[in-house]
Image 1 (cartoon, rainbow, N blue to C red):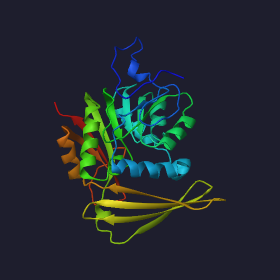
Image 2 (image 1 turned 30 degrees about the vertical axis):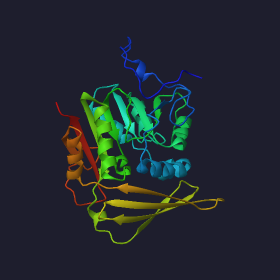
Image 3 (image 1 turned 90 degrees about the vertical axis):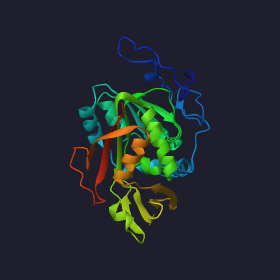
Length: 295
């Protein structure tokens, strides 16, 4: 059992290898809520929000099949390799089972991964027995690790998991305060054009590996820009299991406004990780936005 490490880390001088004490925090992987008992960094215990609670329950329900539903995305690591220096420090919000973080570690990045779901972090621990990823159990909205990173990464619509404007503003501030002065914030959202005019539930079916399927029903509330996602998991030999979450989509211009409130400026926007031009108007396309701190 290693010494307890909390989110309020104290920065230290670099070692001869360029590594700092705050980069070498986690060895054991037991996860607790609020404070660490074994080396897992945690956010302040009073950090919470309705969006966080809903997202956590949804993530817990799908943790066992998440990797079967959503494949890994190594192209994110390839993009960050063009954005920052080799061996840079990365803070990933919504690390989940490590589908982004583990390829980042493969590229030599030093990764801290924040997650609200204990079940997701347990799966990450199984996939990362060497402990290359520093897991942080805590709220993404009011996270404060009292250190900065070369890149703060919010992939796969993580910002949309904050279900109100106030929560999204708070999450933008959290990203900004963890970004080094010469660093970058990279946020992946989606173009909401088609969803904003959706008037009935959209139902899709996804395979869950070779074990079953997930049926998803998506309903939209345009006035508040909220989306209600209901997922029902059908696995061989098991009773159906349902879970729900609420998201709030953002227009690109709205994202820029939230960033400006947090004193971040846009330096690039693309429809993919290969820097494809972003032209809007197609909800099948992602929106990758790159920001840097204002001087």
